Amino acid sequence: MLPYGKQTIGQDDIEAVLEVLKSDWLTTGPKVGEFESAFASVTGSDYAVAVSSGTAALHTAMFGAGIGSHVGDEVIVPGITFVASANAAIYLGAKPVFADVDPETLLIDPADVRRKITPRTKAIVSMDYGGQPCDYAALRAIADEHNLILIADACHSLGASVGEDEAAQPSGSLADFNCFSLHPIKQITSGEGGMVTTNQSDAATKMRSFRNHGISTDFVQRQELKQHQYAMESLGFNYRLTDIQCALGLSQLEKLHRFTRRRNDIARFYNSLLADVPHAEPLQVRQGVKSSYHLFVIKWNSEATGVSRDEAFKLMREREIGVNVHYQPVYQHPFYVQVFGDQSGCCPQAERVYNEILSLPIFPDMVEEDVRRVVRELQNVASANTPKLKVA
Ligand SMILES: Cc1ncc(COP(=O)(O)O)c(C=O)c1O
Image (cartoon, rainbow, N blue to C red; front, side):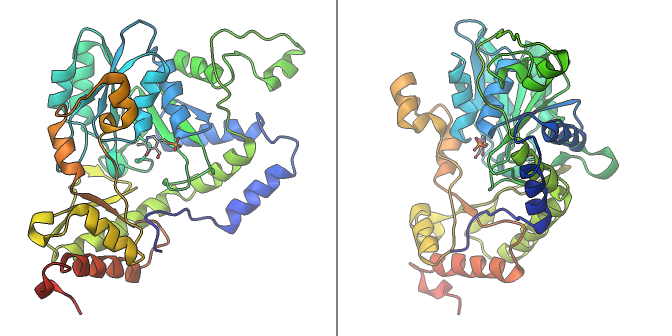
């Protein structure tokens, strides 16, 4: 099966991990700070806080932003995203309120964000779907106007930017808090892992404590202070990222630009081949934006082919092509229906486009023949009900 995503691990990554395994520090050691500094630098942010997953990053960022400090706090979240973007608000006692997405990009629609604001709204969570940054100029204007915090779920967009070259504003610098995942399917990996970036010094301190049970000093700091006492100042978690993971993350980070270039090359090749395939339309990338191409998503035209998206998914899988679907509207999941009731119709575009989207394989080690094969099979699947389209 050609997977829809896959990590690229080199000998340098293996050696970086081995070095830590032979050292004195498997966790809370020097690699954590090194990784955080390098990450902050790559993302153009002042502070980076390493945590154990992207989900932990969202939880930690929302804690840092003070979400849930008032009963009834609401957080606006895109209707189509991974469940963790919304779950993190619930962890803190806040309520996710869903805003619709633009059907051409699947990015949160600023106009619907405006409509969903109430006196209880505390933050807007954007999600850089597929790897392209949202319309942060519009979201920032809304946030400033209503005194809201802007939190980017940037789990898809490490390596992406608004603008290119000298003028590029990297993902990680676009919102007040920016959350990344370092899961193997993502742009770079630390096995499992996450990172929050921010320019707010106080929030960074609060988040470092949160990832360490709410204790303000860590083991190394206490050793330096020759002190055994510690104070737990808030209810935190063990969300630490180990030195082993940080060494892998650091080594991978050095290759981020190469990986991003490669993903962009693959996307360009898909676009050129799909120009002749009218029933599989790639999602649009906004002008002036560089995508990290975490995902390559098409809209499948079931009417033209007589093959539903779900059938196309099944037929592609039968042909050993690991397609996927990102994502079902969050509020349709049973937990959300049980807790918040039936919210059908709250994001009509998200509900419609969910039935059309299909993620095609994309990862740095893919070769051109893989891309050709995926497109060939897409054409064969389309012709399942219309034999005249069949490609030899
Ligand atoms: C948009 C989005 N948010 C959050 C997450 C959660 O990240 P993790 O799996 O590292 O907890 C993911 C990971 O799949 C994601 O794609």
